Structure formats: C-alpha cells, structure tokens
Length: 174
Image (tube, rainbow, N blue to C red; front, side, top):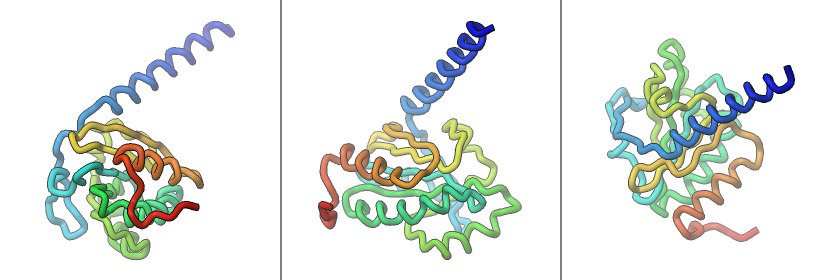
C-alpha cells in the first residue's frame, strides 16, 4: 500500500511538472479581450518592449487584493524600463459589475482586461489565483508564480531585474 501511494504521488508530481514545463515553454499567441470600457484590446497592442507581466486575479480573491498594491509599486518602478503590466480579471459575467469599482478603489494604473469566460486562463493552463506570468519580448513565457504571500513581490522584482538586466532608475538600495 505504501509503495502504491508513492507511485501515485510520483505520477501526480510528474504530471504537475509536465504541465508547468508546458506552460513555461509556451509562447503567448496574440489574444484579444475587452477592457473596462468594453473595447476590444489585443495583447500585441499592450505588451511591453522588454517584458510583459500578466496578473490573473478576481475581485473575490483575497490574496489577489493583497498582491495588487505590491504589483502597482512594481509597475511604477519598471514602467519606464520597457516592462508592461496587464491585469486580467477572471470574474464571472455576474461579477463583472464589481470589477471597475474594485480597480478604481485599488488605484490600479495599468491596463485591465476581462477574461470573464476564462478562455485565456484555460488556454494558458492557469489554475490558481493570483497567477503571474512574465512574458519576454518574443512572447515566450519565462516565469510563472502562483498565489501570494508577503515577500513574493521581492521574488517578482528580482526576476524582472534579472530578465531586463538592470535595476529601475529610481530604485534605492536598502
């Protein structure tokens, strides 16, 4: 019985790693979603010169709400370095009326797109909220992070710095 459980766990871990590697090795195909003004906007219109950070979130997700102020700071620090942040709300159609007030109350300055039927989320194999994907200038997914705990913003910041090769101009050493 013990061996059988280990074997099942091993298959589960292998499947998980396979899914992660497929997602990480993937390329983002251009996609179009509606923004908060109900206009259709494509990824290629919004993406950053060097990197694009995609943040999948929902209004009802408490870890998402805790992460967003940290993401705003990161966006402000790197927006002039060729890094774009795009928030992707995966709220269901019946919750869509909550998205714009939530965005306004959080003071989110970067573009927000609506994936209300979770098609993009499914296509990119995003299974948890929040999920951050970093996409390079050739549309390759180069980093993925699930969930949010205090300190995760430091990991994201370090990854962005590593990928763009320098620190933001207004960053101060602590």
